[in-house]
Length: 486
Image (cartoon, rainbow, N blue to C red):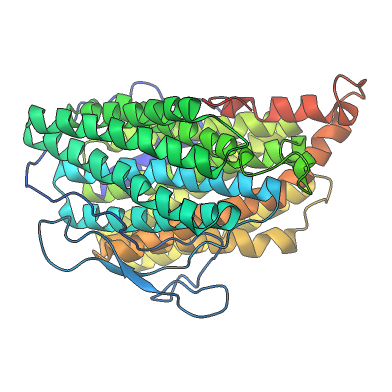
């Protein structure tokens, strides 16, 4: 197992400099297991670290007020029986400004897509404990989406949305179960149920956010995402892992973009701050957050696949490499090729250290684990210095360094939890890492945007902000896979 993780070091060192890994198609010999499992229940709740970054050594997720929040369970038994998963969670604090609610819904919808993918793959593999933890995390994500709806449209709207949102999860899980057990009739029944629930959900969301996307267009967007998720289930079950991860990336980008379209419906033209909703700065933060969030999700996939020796490891590594190339491309568009090369080298060191940490944990080598933990902290410091220099000191190392160090610590902590079989804690920490990079995007985007604008030629009215709009468009071209138009 450790050998597989260490292999990632060499694989991704090239990709971080801008080259996408080639020739790493799946084709492993693992076959889907078929142990039966019950679908997630409506209203399942569990961990989510949105807007909170806990002490990675703590056993619970700290709420913003210092409390541990409510401990809520997942489904009534994704393993076919037994107690629901119990984990601490920090409920989302709904955004109140137009740009902020856009960014928040993008983040939450992207998280929903990633967690749904993990849930279905756990079911296909027959990993019932992992499926329970994923179900619980999806329940928390449902609660958080409902909280945002309630803040902007009231409790009745949230009560209408929440069971339908969770109903999507139940139908998708049922499809994965049908595929895993070879029950074609059950899979097709689940597909039909998913379509029905999605139609109702689109209506409920359009009613809750009447100023934006229509119910018809919203249903089209949701159907497209769900179809992609089901297609990746089929690909994963058929051991077509490279295709499954390509579909995972597409599903994530699609639903992430739908978050903006949904948020637009909450915001009236005369709402204070409406002009910031689609400003170049907001777009940059949005797209940078999208790539960083995907980085976290794929890093989690890669380290877990490497530690357990699953056959999807090479395809997961290739997907992470592609994300790394996209990030480097974005940095090049904003800051230049020299900065992109330097960033790529630092990002490769980060991935190298995480891979080494996972390998050491899997091997039970405490000394190597400590060595890689120190390497993670060192690269965090170097990344802070890089962004400070690359942005002309617009970002202070002392400001970024603690956040980057905490990010590395939390990612390492989820590896420890996963290795110990503490899957609910592993999901809690990975959620914290995911939400944490969106906070980093919020810190970095204004400085990167200002630097890009300063370096761009001063244009006329068509370029806007003295060329800033063009610079930011170049900076974010790698994240152009949004299904819903901006």
